[in-house]
Amino acid sequence: MVKVNEHYARVGNNYLFSEVARRVREYKATRVGGRNVISLGIGDVTREIAPAVIAAIQEATLEMASPETMRGYPPEAGYDFLVNAILEHDFRARGVTLDADEIFISDGAKSDTGNIGDILGTDNLVAITDPAYPVYVDTNLMAGRQIELLPCLPENDFCPPFPARPADVIYLCCPNNPTGTTLSREQLKSWVDYAIEHRSLILFDAAYEAFVSGTDVPRSIYELEGAKRVAIEFRSFSKTAGFTGLRCAYTIVPRELVVAASTGETVSLNAMWRRHQSTKFNGTAYIIQRGAAAVYTPEGQRQTREIISYYMQNARIIKEGLERAGMTVHGGIHAPYLWVKTPAVLSSWEFFDLLLNEVQVVGTPGSGFGKAGEGFFRFTAFGKRAEVVEAVERVGSLF
Ligand code: MLT
Image (spheres, rainbow, N blue to C red):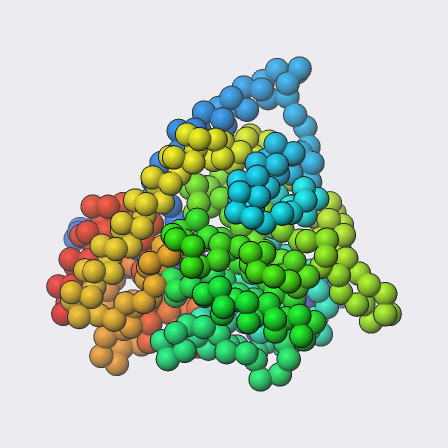
């Protein structure tokens, strides 16, 4: 008789963003006419893909039309042309040296942050910031792991406190989704030191690093001394270059990352992840990897920077507009997310309902990201400019 993974009973029926989409669909279905619904909910990009990326994808597609240049299965860890561009632009240019076999190209940071648990024991104690991108908690619940939540609140400047019990695995996300806040170099260094001392593994989600400006906030955990011995880093082209619909990301698993197995032998997480990917993943499409490589060309860099600054201008508009309306707004300086205190005593979902029903604006309830997110609400800056301006006016009209 078939047995199911009973740990799935520990997660709700719907993934957060599916639940938000369901409620919006239901709302739209029950009304006739009325003004448009503006979504500043899921962080999905709205600007067209950079022309340099499109041109590279078109060219690569044409290569597929000829027997001389067509490609079959891609190498499961990625093509050299993309890996080398990443090493040069994302790391070497910023003083971080990594080797090609430490980079694993994939189809998304969501899948990688979710699947990484496959190579980790289910008896690890996992520390996760609260609130957090729901994938971290949901996938660890599904695997049956014990979780300790690290509340990140205005009171601690959204810097996670160290866990009460030594954690084996720690999830950190900087710039943070959902709070839009960042960790300073010193704060992140203290986590690297913690992990070295407790022989823990940090899973560092840097999907939003492209939104960091200036040099105070680290863009990679490997900028910090000792991090290669304790951290895996996740990066994504989704928000950096509008790849939410194209799917391309990469994960760095340094070779220095070795852990002691229960047998006493040392095990390389890099070798384990390679074994995982070669077994469960068949590589990211050639044409998509060509598109991603085009992000690193001079035009690609210029065009994607322009798109990022458009979103960050949106973030400023939302922040200033909501503050003018009297709301307390966190984040949105080095990240495309604004973390807003819900007004009066409204819960996150009550505020969601109020915005949807009264002003037809969609955001994401903070409690969907964890208990410490209750009483907060997330707006994304990935909107179209006119809609962002209008949404801010509509929300402001409620106060
Ligand atoms: C978000 O809105 O948090 C993200 O867009 C979701 C994701 O990256 O999967």
